[in-house]
Image (cartoon, rainbow, N blue to C red; front, side):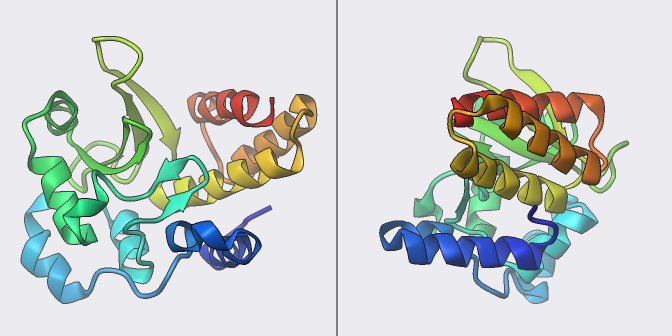
Length: 201
C-alpha cells in the first residue's frame, strides 16, 4: 500500500523507469510552489492548509497520478500558479459551480473537476469531484478527507489496476483496505470502489 507522499514519489519514480515514454508526466519533483508565490499570487483564493502543504512540498503541475491530472486545466498554463488562477477565475459552468459551493478547482479526472473545500468553508480540505460529463446538471461527489489522502488513494488505485487486472474481487478488497486506512467516509469509499471496477476489468 502507498501510505505516504514519500511512498507515492517512489512509486512514480519506479513507474517512470518502467515506462520512460511517460516519465515527464508521472515524475513528482520537489519542491512545489514557493511561499512567496503563494502569498503574492494565490493569497485571495482561500486555499485550505493540507492542500497548501502538498503543493508547497511537491511540484504537481503537469503530473498525472494514475487516472487523475493533479493540476487544473491545460498544460499551456505554464505553471501551477497560473493554472490555479485560470481554473478558478473562469466563467465556465464548472468554475461557477465550484465558487458557489466554496470550493477551489485543483485537479481533474478527464473533464470532471477535482476540488477542495476552501479554508473558510464548513469542510476545509475535503475533496470533491464535480461531474460535468454525465448530465447537464453538475453532480458533486465526496472523494477524500483531504488532498494528501486523495493523492495517496489515486496512487493506490493505479497500483491496484496494475496488480489485479481481471480480478475485480481482489482489487476491491485492497481498495477497501486503503479507504479504511485513510478514514474515508462511506460516500468516499463508494467513489473509489466504483473506479476499481473500471480499472481492473
